[in-house]
Amino acid sequence: MLFRVDPASTISLAEQVATQVRAAVTDGTLDPGTRLPPARELADALDINMHTVLRAYAQLRDDGIIEMRQGRGAFVRVDAGAGTVRLNELADQLLAEAKRLGIATADVLTIIQKRAPSRREAER
Image (cartoon, rainbow, N blue to C red; front, side, top):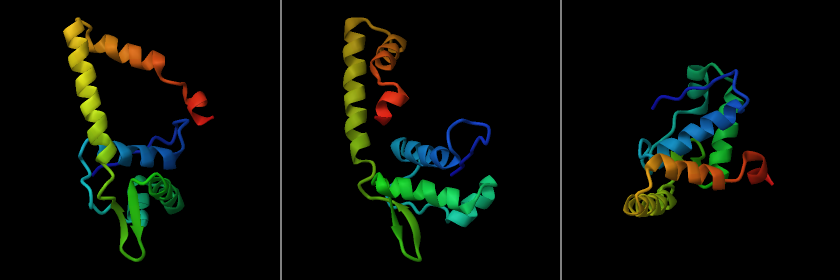
């Protein structure tokens, strides 16, 4: 698994790591039960502070994506992808309905983006 961070980004380094793990779980790159790299090892590879990786892992733990096992590391939870499966089913249904109505995928994405709350609104 390859992680990357952008130190110039306005998104915190910990959030960048957490987002990449979430995406990897969602797209199946990280299977349930997969062990994540040790925090020190990942921090060294990304040239960031180990505590930044630990913050990302703690956020993922709090979100129910990973579990931390004392002395054994961080693992993707067995049930981490359950919501993703349902979301993928709904996305498939949405795209099938859009196709039936003659709406292009790009237009569906535009509709979703317009309806999605802004990041600031979502944080409230």
